[in-house]
Image (cartoon, rainbow, N blue to C red):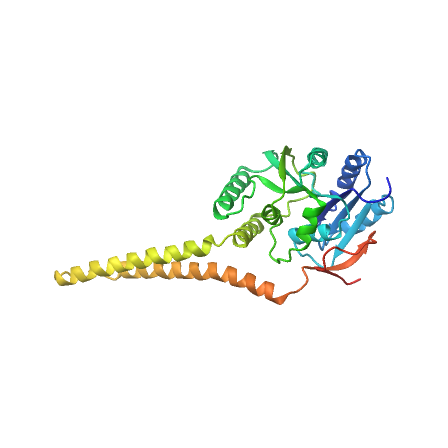
Length: 323
């Protein structure tokens, strides 16, 4: 299996010392079964445990493994982006290292790709080992995101997917900093198909997406792909203004009838409500302004501490090799 690379498998990792060995083992078995040339690109996203050391040890025996080592933690979506930048394959597969997304499903994705599809994503029909709260919040998120955006983003779909070379090249030309990769791929279009699968329990270790991080991720997804929060804020401002005007008419009517206001409770309550709404609207505007500020700085998306196993230069100049 030599010559040009047919399949690139991109695997972002952050503090995954408990799973990397098994992950490489299963990915290698699956990709060997294709009888085609491939590469495994593990992106070490600033891990503070022994993840990098373990990957280096595995690479001594498995030259299909390549390692991108970030200078610090830049985040899951940026790690995926770096992997796509350096991938050489005709098809690029994205999968997490925790084995919740079974590597064997990639063979079904490859079949769809061979049929002519440019993007093949895994659709979760069942999620094992997750709490009712996590399942419910995930369901609400995907449906809320779908209602907030004009782009059709598939429900119950993560970053587990296959991209044709031309789609990956298109992603390399997108330089947004606050990235929501699955949304960008949906925005790009192309001929897409789904492969349903059962999401397994985590092989080992702890989730890298606790509740607070999931909230931040959801907020970033909504703000990155929709102006509706700004429009809703404007609509809310109009409704509040109309309500305030109506209340003013009521107060004037009461004044001319000779009735006095018994206390200030209602005024204080209305003041708190209005001030809260104003602060909320300012917060929404601030989210958009913050993203404009990030884009204006034009810093590289990521910095690389070390590249192991690579010969070709990245297709994008987003990253900077500091080695």
